Length: 265
Image 1 (cartoon, rainbow, N blue to C red):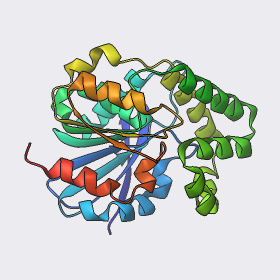
Image 2: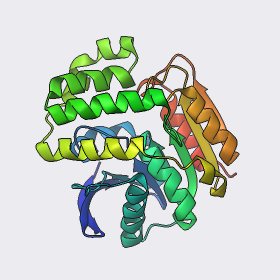
Image 3: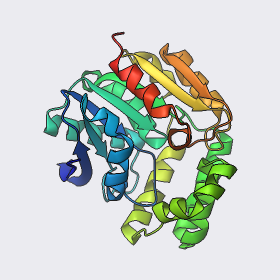
């Protein structure tokens, strides 16, 4: 599969993205926070979503490489909007995961012309005390430079114990290899997540919405997904027995995305 990796400049900052597929419909993926750029895993992502390649052209965006101090989720959304404007993308099928889904919510509120359909996965519209506590621990580990502890706590928070034990080596390899720039970005983005609250604006989202949560989500909890679905009037699906990373663990997850994005509703 042909994968194209490029950089677009938004508001003076560099944003890396990769794309694949030849379909007419743009499919924009906004991944969650990570200790390394998702673009470094482009072949694995493209292989996982290969069934979308005929129907869609898929674009997967990393957050800006070097966010400034005080960077917010509203800033991530505005930078993403600028990137989509630069690429001429409109009315896309937008799939956001975790922090990426926070960006996607904000994008749908502020730039409805860019979002034709919206899937919000394992996310929240405002941060609970439990989520804030976890994010502050991760932030502190990143700032202290204890990267092995950071990778381990992060992975255990998002994956179910059985999945983590089965794929531990691959998971830790995916989290590892971070540069100092990657860690600096992680610190600033965890702060942005802690300050995020768009709950009172969710009713402004006018496109079709599917919210996917997980019954055992240790990061944001299942109620956060229920709240978003209720406020947006969107569909809700909960993966019982799965954790935050249901998008990696549930065998029918990608088929669920495909069916929603290709439905005629």
